[in-house]
Length: 438
Image (tube, rainbow, N blue to C red; front, side, top):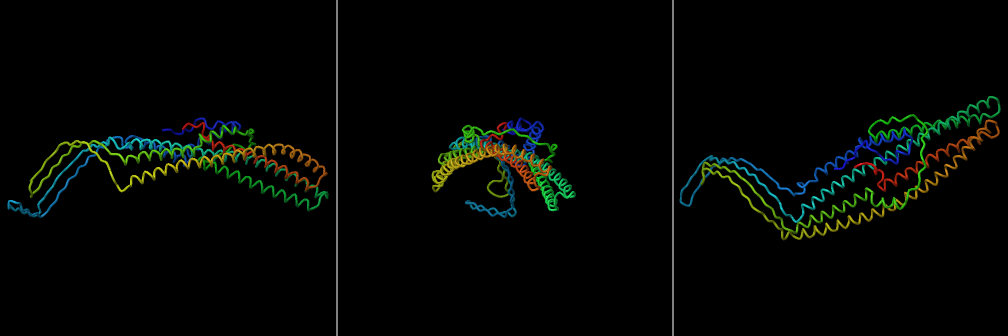
């Protein structure tokens, strides 16, 4: 039986995305998910169940041995009359007996049903293994997207803190200018309003960060104790080779693998159903011990023991066309299973094309935001210096400040969208668990 082994090399691609501290943190989180996630534990138990049931005995290939024993006692009022004219009567006549029987029965031929059942048990195990992989893929996908959303949110929180500091400095400067009569009270009120607004934004970003931490804790089953808040850095993502990943979609997609296994199961069930048209041949052997005592009757006592062996043959010739109708229904189920695979392939191709195009657009947007970031940052520096010198108005400086913050947020979020699109492609092509031993 194949099983996941936490503690091995996990997702080498994503472990190279971050700095060493982030790499180790992500590795530990993935190990906790593999160990603690209830969905994975359930799927792992289902795989163990399928492994236990995958044996020749479960398929009916081995002989069956039964031991049956019993005892009886009766008290009856009895009147007997024989052909010879003799009569016998008794009240409360006792009859008691003991019988035991050991029987071995082995179905040698059942129309090859047992071989189809054994193959189906193997397919059940493979299907449980694929279900386990799907549970791991979905759980790790959720963890990785949440973890990088958390890292991006840390950056956003730092940007908000920097923006709040700018608003604080502006408020102090405006208050000083107001006290010296250089600006109006309206300018001071606007500066206070913007500071309060940015303070509220910072608190909301803190709440969002805490929500990501709580979600990671739920996925791992343990409290998430993050490292100190430092700016997280990420390498640039590249558009993957479309043809290669499309081939992996058709060969490694877990959902498609499970659909193909269900088709194989349907074919095996169809083979097993053919046995209804063929005879059954088996052998048996038994040993029995019987003892009977009567207070009235033909025999006073009977004691017997011995063995009995033989061969049996069963062949149903007619049962109201039930076998024929079941076979036609099974053939239709097999046809439906094949059509489901075809339909799933069409759906996955559409999903892949959309995700690939989405990644292409997200990467283009990210590159544009990267270029825009440099320009907006320079504009903000110039605006800040001019505001200090009194060359631009309070509103113009606020616009430059807001533009800088929005540019930073767009850059962070465009990278996150690109990363999620990349992760989705990896999920569809079966690469999320590519480095996990199963």
